[in-house]
Image (cartoon, rainbow, N blue to C red; front, side):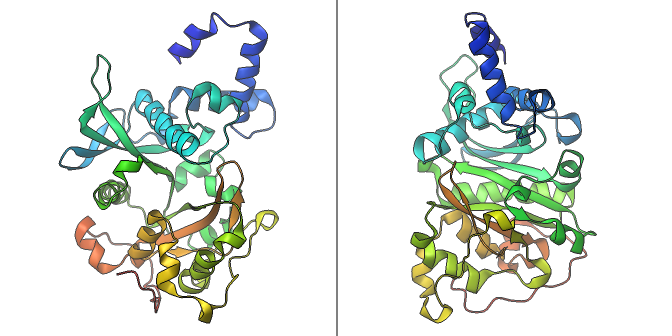
Length: 335
């Protein structure tokens, strides 16, 4: 925020107010004034006090030069936002609005109520006086009781998750989102470290179910017919765990008959993140949503802790919860 204010002194008053209006609009709350405070908090990298797990950045795991951290400072959140901008807007096909272009960071009001996981490489440092290790990956985590105090989950804009939450009101939900990793770090090592951090967080906060939007690149569902249909037929959540898109944004996933799908071919068209979720035991919701801003087609991931494949628990540990055992999925060639 300091660098913003220093630059602001040289800007005419009217353009400056327009920039503030653009930033406030990110909160997606009608009117400038109600959205201004959360938007400016997110812009600054600040977290609301009841949402912040730690005032200090702390480690959740390390593998060689790579370490996964839980952000505790506003500067860490801003660095995560810069990484997201670099990946989503410069490398991929997201369309930046005026506020995003001005900040050169991917920011929304949820940043202020989420915890932020960071993967840093101690072998690569920024070229500044502090010599901080470079952030090469990030994930955003939102616990249910925090979401309920501040307007709900991010994924509720695309999926009707309220019936799911009501059916499992005795369980604690954790939303995962805004995942990104620099291209040359998109490998098994980095993903395992991220999951080590997520698992340590899940255990610490006694979470029972992980949910969140995951994306396939592209906005033409016909071109994504094979992977969408594969997910519909082979990984759709059982009824008690299912959530459907909001009606106005629903895109049908069942586009190819099940008997016409070659699962191995379909798997090759899935992003590594979604395949990772499926390996752990995740299900997907009913229907997809096209996100024109980010140039993606989104699905809902539902991963109860009780569904996690037993062979992966040796990597992360185990927790106990009250969730009932889940039905097995047959014919999913994920090993």
